[in-house]
Image (cartoon, rainbow, N blue to C red; front, side):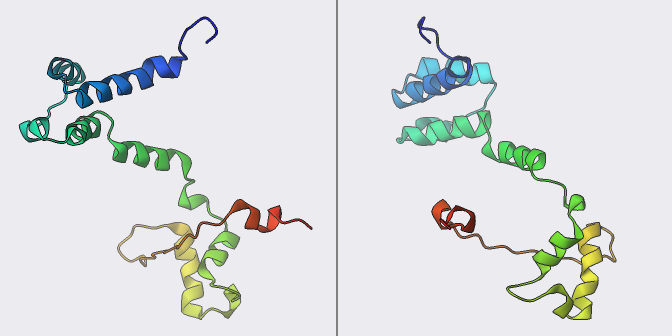
Length: 147
């Protein structure tokens, strides 16, 4: 950067996004048309003529860089396979509060093996796990409290 060169990420990614954003906000039709044709996108006339330039920008970006595909591929790459779960982890997920796995009804305990198999057979039970997450300040976590 000391020689006036931009970092590679800026050159390859950010400059293109900024260029698109600037062209749409300034309503530079020639530049927008050039970008859209070079990316091979099809933008509807309704979005192109909309009074709000953000609608046009959203239409271009949702085709060029679809967030749903990016999130799904990231989840598939980063989240471990459910088949790799340990028996202890399954027991913790099935128990609520201070209850132990042994205190659960026998029918519920039998679901442990089905939980670990993740079977898609027609006879396998359907198990749904619902989790509610609460944001907590990092200072409030037990490992960060002063002793």
